[in-house]
Length: 112
Length: 116
Image (cartoon, rainbow over all chains, first blue to last red; front, top):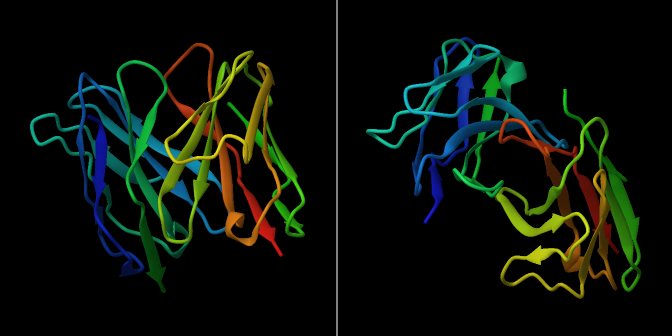
């Protein structure tokens, strides 16, 4: 079946620190992979995505590479800011249909 | 870009009353919309898949008579929480998939329901 396993939080970092949030998946076929971000009191926003192996998604300084060999899609940012404080969700979409599978979310707090 | 509007963003109601939440795709057609429930510090729980012109498909454990879903057009789906109770208090989020194009979900901003 399809599932996403995400690093548990919460994660607390100082401003300008390096961020990694681990995400691994199991899937049948060739899924697309996503990172969504949820700011306090809001819905989810697409942060970045990758649709095939070795693709790198990037946005707002965040990056994630679709690694088929390790079934991973780890989120990274070289220098976090206070404004990056949010909950981050890793997700996959099966190769057919629009069914999405979400990880449990990782809460990130960046302190000045 | 694709925008999904969800209304109301916050609603407080008395126990026993019904509440309707709307989810609209503003600039694209969505044959499929999804309704999620988010518990505090938990991930999103898919409640049901709403298909335009047909009955919604509910996930196991979700009461279809309590959470009524209607998808009357390609741009509107509604979730009605019937006879609400305090345990129904939660954050409800809808999302919509485009009819065509990349396989990406666009999420609404969510609706915070508080049942007194």
